[in-house]
Length: 285
Length: 292
Image 1 (cartoon, helix red, strand yellow):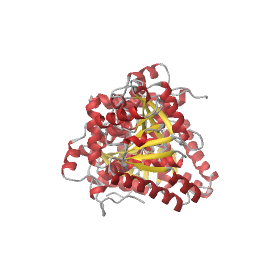
Image 2 (cartoon, each protein chain N blue to C red; image 1 turned 180 degrees about the vertical axis):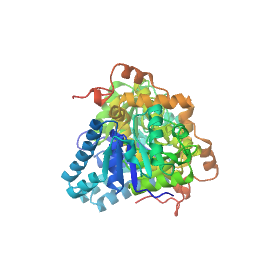
Image 3 (cartoon, rainbow over the protein chains, first blue to last red; image 1 turned 120 degrees about the vertical axis):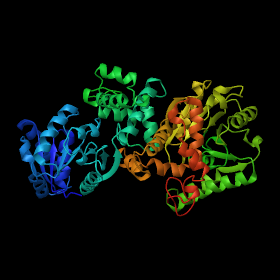
Image 4 (tube, each protein chain N blue to C red; image 1 turned 135 degrees about the vertical axis):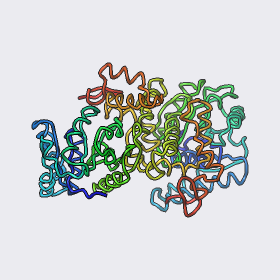
């Protein structure tokens, strides 16, 4: 099992910033790659803002914040990732883009480095297949927000070696996460269970099983779920869920993943959830 | 109603009947608990008293409230004793015929305004009202287990349930401190409609090698933030109960997500029913051990 000291994080979007922060907080040296200086600045700024809020709430000392930030080196040059023993890719969910970027990164970090993708909807196996030494490739699927959510899915591609899985699991533990190992199948484990549940909720609502509020209250009070399915859907975004469940349906042809007709109509109407001011529910702002 | 509270008849001295009786006496209602045998009545009354005693010890009830609650409780094996009841809550064995006959028999004895509540979890409220002359008074009131602690009650309208009965029922349940949700007479109502296929999906993910019992429970607890992993929950519910509920919903909905996976049949056949037998998805040191 390879020892990891330096981690390259590709992409400083929502997931990338969270992952870079978690790695730096755990004491790893982090090289964070973005496409432009503006995106880099903005990503690093969001990490700092998140940590400053932690300082305000007394969760960490300001000196710790400085030390964490000092461990993250931002760059727009792939060459600066040299020496990383682990790469975690968290760029947009586009197979060609990921493949092109990782091919360049693989050439810089060498064949010994472990390469992990944070994809949630693409095939880890397909990503691995385009890289040299695909046995050192696996999935490391964080949940949003990465600094707060404990679970990490370690996803085994068809090519992943046992050593790769062991290293990814060990790193996740060093990040104080609770890793679980699962197979590279659509949705991995959590979303495989979650998407049919959300689709069922939309269809049940559409068919008049109960009001949206009563479905939410029923599952929150009846089962102790932290948030009912209609509220969750509005939070993650109807377009985001539509995209994910459609991808799973295309790969499985299992109707539990089929895009519910009401979901399709709501996306068409621009009712995307909280971010657009209306989804299943209406929002003031 | 008034100071004496409502006269409530609870049918069945099992877990749910006892839980519902506790809720009623605590809220100030007069409860007559009916079971078919003296032993059944005795066990039911003891169950209510034991819970109230614990509440007293824990300081959740003061001595006066404890004594008053116990004074509002009595038991009988005689159906005729229920004639003066204003609300009947049925929590007997999950058998449509049995429940329908119990309501029809009581309808002949009770007044014209008496509400008939069924606590069925998987059967049709419409069918349970099927033998009554006035089925408008039958409403599903599905309490969650343990009833004294869980706030939710699903209020279910059968095909013939009247709007007035539903409105009176909701007001009554709110008076008990419950939160209600409304749904039609659809199999599994809201909670089990969602829970049962999710549980079966977890079992199928296990069979598909997507994870282990432990890792799938971790995914559910840490990834979805549900209060308890599915396999831990199924071990508490009991695999035999899960199989029966799944089959009942599958019979009614004919959706394969509700069909219990083969592993459930095998576990039931092997006697691995969960905590109560010492082994289900997990192994337990003491059979029947419940968390304290």
